[in-house]
Image 1: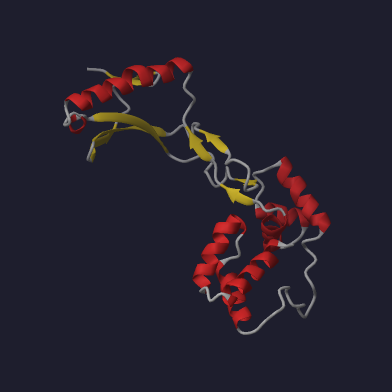
Image 2: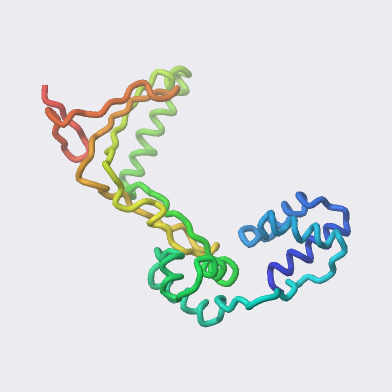
Length: 230
């Protein structure tokens, strides 16, 4: 049975048991997750069933029927997104000569896919780096905290980051079409532009205590470290 029809049956069942529309929608969201009817559609069907409607299927509409979501178009959309997960709705709609919303409907209702943004991840640590963090750094910090409860409040730490003039690829541009069961895509950090400046930030347990942009003159870089000429 189609998931939309199943949810309509559930709504009718909820009405028969005196369950409110808002509670019914919460139950649908828990059972169907991302495939749940939109709030607007759920309320429309709830109202229709409460008014006495018995038909679960959509009634035939007047005018020219939509033929965009054909098996051929669905197959073509699936082929396009398999070859290039970064394809946009507009690009696919132009290639297949159909409307923007028709492609969105194919992704949502027929393929069960959604556009998800890439998640930035730090570079992987090797085994010895991870072991050092656990055995030396983390355990040492725990011992200090146990011996002196105010230790954490007296720590001031800092970090640096590059501030770029512009991004070469935004998270939205790195988005891909994925099934609900597929993991989110990963987007490695990379140089955005040649025009950049180093921002240094110092903070304690309450938040940022000082921040400044390092001047270009009098500074040189060694890997991840910064040395300033005296």
